[in-house]
Every structure is written in structure tokens, then in C-alpha cells.
Length: 141
Image 1 (cartoon, helix red, strand yellow):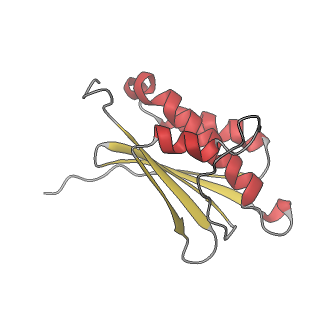
Image 2 (cartoon, rainbow, N blue to C red; image 1 turned 30 degrees about the horizontal axis):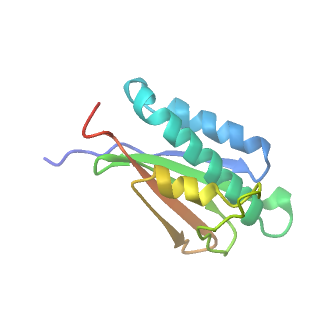
Image 3 (spheres, helix red, strand yellow; image 1 turned 120 degrees about the vertical axis):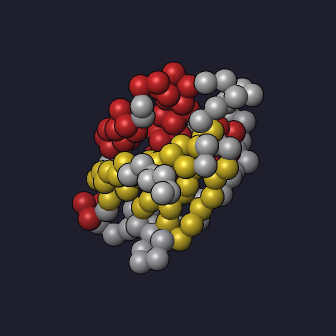
């Protein structure tokens, strides 16, 4: 009999700056307690950066009509986080000015994630998907 996979955790938040903290808390609480010391900080930072980008760059039309969607699931030795928004833009890693205050979010994502990508959603919007390995530093658990 095949192993039944875990059901992904799923949330929707308004596209509002207050949702960044709520999303970060939700992702942290969804992690099994044993994994929080190893993955909690990285997933919290990824959540903050991706949700902030979705709010800043993925809002379409009236802000009240926009939602940022998060999905968190374990698969293939990683915890995967997908952050989706209704926008059609494709985020890219920037080369920020040394004195600039913005433009480093995807550099952090690129550094923290074992792999990440941007995908168009079938109906409307864009998702950024990033994976953090379950065992970092040579298999430490």
C-alpha cells in the first residue's frame, strides 16, 4: 500500500501589511514541534519576504478584493512554501543599490531555499514556490 502524504496546510490572508505577521505565525505554528528549531527561522523569513512581495507587487485592482494564499507541505525531503497572489508579474532577483532599502527579498529567498521558482497560476495570478531541506548542514536533524 502506498504511503499517504500529509495534507498541505493552506491559508488566505488579505493583501495588507498586517497579514505578513499573521502568515509568519501560521507557518510557524503549522510546523511539527521537532522541526521548529531547524526550519522555523528560515521558513519564517521566507514567509515574510514572499508575503511582503505578494502584497507590494501582486495586488490587482481594489486592495480589498485581493488575497494572498499560502500553502505549506512536506515532500521529497523538503518543506515547500507556495505564496500566491492575483498579479501577473514575475518576480526576479534584483541587483540592489548598496545604500538602497529595497530589492533584497528574493536574494534572501535565493540564499535560504534549496530551490525556488515562479509559476503562473492556471486561472489567475502567480505563485512563488520555495523549498527548505528537512535536514540541513550535512543531515543534522
